[in-house]
Length: 202
Image: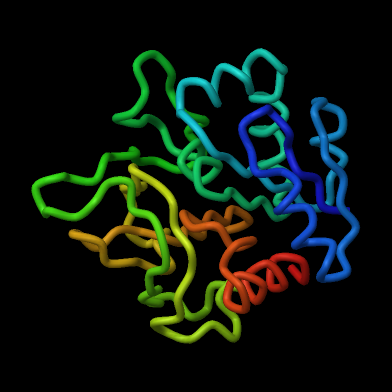
């Protein structure tokens, strides 16, 4: 069973529909008990960093998420969900992140002349082909982005793929049972479905 965390900030139904189309059983969860019972866990997200951390704290979900990480079971963060894995964000005024992965979240520079947010289709530069999420995914396949901030891991080895947008940023993170994607796989057609299928089959 794949549990999708509902903390009032995520694109829950699109993610759920995509996973179910792959034959996976899913459940939307809001309680600590249900988080820890999951076989696989997904943290989606759309919105602001401070608001998201406030919601996770108010719902008592921070400790259960951190406890889940220690079980070794697969955990996927999507867009803002990935950013929440990190220690801090330039977007945040008051809140720290979950601190699952060392590093920070930074804003795209407007000096490049590119529009912020980064919105639309862009390619993946795959440099960790052994990452389980990337099985069958070729270099330069396109996925759909919508974000103004990107993750900057302290340890570059957790970066499984990057994308170019004024700078080369990490678009897929992988460390042990932790997976994160900056794009929206549920909106990324065939490539996104391959990545979600790989997660389902972990």
